[in-house]
Image 1 (cartoon, rainbow, N blue to C red):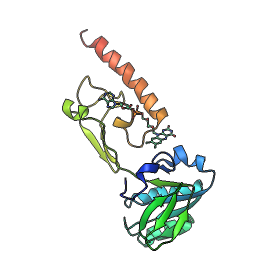
Image 2 (image 1 turned 60 degrees about the horizontal axis):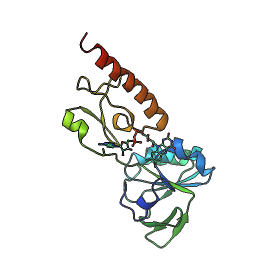
Image 3 (image 1 turned 135 degrees about the horizontal axis):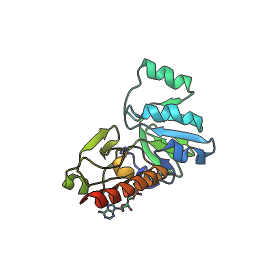
Image 4 (image 1 turned 120 degrees about the vertical axis):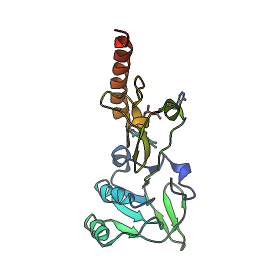
Amino acid sequence: MPDVPGLAERWGKSVFHCPYCHGYELRRGRIGVIASSELSMHHALMLPDWGETTLFLNEAFVPDDGQMAQLRKRGVTLERQPIARISDHATVELSDGRAVALDGLFTITRISRADPLAEQLGCDFDHGPMGPVVKTDAMKETTVPGVFACGDIARMAGNIALAVGDGTMAGAATHRSLMFADL
Ligand SMILES: Cc1cc2nc3c(=O)[nH]c(=O)nc-3n(C[C@H](O)[C@H](O)[C@H](O)COP(=O)(O)OP(=O)(O)OC[C@H]3O[C@@H](n4cnc5c(N)ncnc54)[C@H](O)[C@@H]3O)c2cc1C
């Protein structure tokens, strides 16, 4: 995640990545988007549907004229001053001494896997803007025959419902592959 002091400690408590998971919990409050790259435009343009939104550029990118027009159209407040740290629940302290108290923060992270098993088995990866995910077909089989993958490791921007659904498919497909392998 962006290298902002105080951000990591608040991950999952007042710092989130998924508007659909956590936007509703903020009860139309004050929302901050901490930019990590130009991709943060996506967050900034979505989140006004869940609350009053400020985009903190934090020197991650500079919006062009078209992006500025989109931000204005969605009523997003733009803050260009770099961030010094996050304090309290979700207060953004700026490098010029100002502080903006918010109800929650969103930032776009890059994902990494907990262990190298998929690489060791020779699985191919799709490379998305948030990082690599194991490539699978509709039955959740990877590019290595007989190896199946499901959940966050095998899709970008996952959630629990999708992980459970993918797991159901991968489980059934694994059983079929074992059962029919020797017939
Ligand atoms: C901050 C945050 C908030 C979220 N909020 C929501 C929400 O509100 N609603 C929602 O639907 N989704 C939410 N999500 C997304 C959701 O948590 C994931 O999509 C979901 O947990 C994915 O399930 P999974 O089984 O693929 O992976 P995980 O839940 O990550 O489970 C993988 C498990 O495998 C274990 N593991 C890894 N390597 C090994 C190994 N070698 N041997 C044995 N075990 C291993 C790990 O320890 C872990 O327990 C949130 C995610 C985050 C990060």
